[in-house]
Image (cartoon, rainbow, N blue to C red; front, top):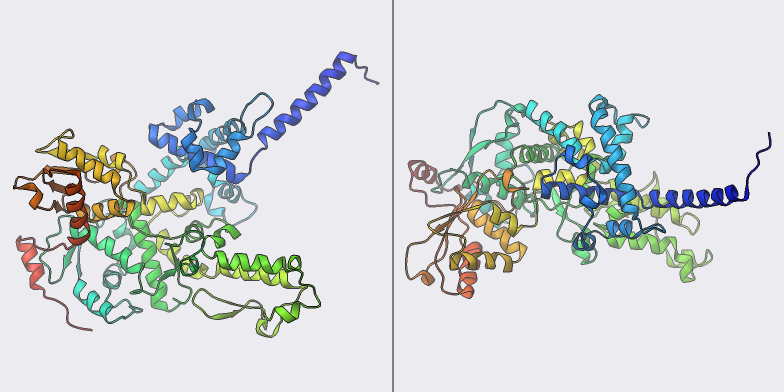
Length: 556
């Protein structure tokens, strides 16, 4: 049969082919990273607008389309929005429709997928894990909540006695607590780590703290202070578990304030200390007692077993990535095979994070890097640096899995786990205001208005310090509804007000605020208080007096 086409049909066929190609380009625009950026935006939109899964499934792209401010914060999303077809329709709209349909199907199918098969490359669970960044939080959160509730333990609150004086004494001597003997973290490790994991799977306060030699009565403040001290010690030279990222020392690149796992922490005690850190992370996620941990994406990706990339390595050690790129492209600088050995004197070894020389292949110390194998050398250096802390991350993961539904973690991205464990690092003043109540004053009083002006004028570091001053923690909850306590702003009755500092009650998350006469005095008094009045001491209750009677530690 020989088909016959009219001239009109041939024209329409050409138009259809052209339109089909345009649709393919539109729907195929962007990468998995662009799609993940779109999903992050949709998740944030749903959280901000309190949109549930049913509502989201019926929304159009116009309902969730990003604002100009959203696009400034997400360059990947901006690229997707700006990719359009001849009619002006955005690739973001096309991708949203596909992702929305995917999530609609997953809602019904997810409970039938065996997530324990994730390790097998051919499994549906593995495919789902690989595209975890495309799953709306509204789809996976109900499963997570149900699993968390069904695995809550029935343990009771226990007492944790901590000697901050012993920790301070050893710290002054410049010691490193490699055996978890004297640091606050080490003392807690010795008391809590041997307990049954189920005893720690609780949503309320897990322990009451007694600070030996200090007159403190734990109505919440010392408990939160113990969490703050764990994080402070972990991110210091007192413990051997973490170390600064190379970008910090080289003063280049991103994440200069972050900490990496220490590959030299390999003793059996250190391994168990990492497991305990994983348990603490799980307890923090379950109880919403957020930890102020500054870890780079590379570490969080290892914990949720997301694939790593050169971008992750560059995020902690830009210098090594640039060095390897220069070596790969050394021919562009005029270095030929004939002169290569005169300028490059490397062997197949590299320096580890802790300064050791490590062979990249068996006998690497005796194998020279040549013009021909320089690409292999560069690849091996980067692969080693990406994975040199996998043993330490695996230990943390073991602890984490005792507290959280580990199979479901394969559906969550690294930043979603970080949010569960650490909360929001940025202190959102609008969120803070929404979880505030007033006693003896009102939101319209002049000194209260000055207070909120001061909070907005403060840097994020100062706002975090304020939270620690009033609450014993440095981060807000994810939402006002998730707050275990509301902040109470109280009137301060003494006069003249300009002669006094604000008074905090960390156990009750409250602040007595004097009626300062000017904005400048308000900010000056608050800054001094939050940075110079940190001690939890002075409770005159019988418990506080008993804690003080325990005395200061004098042993080594």
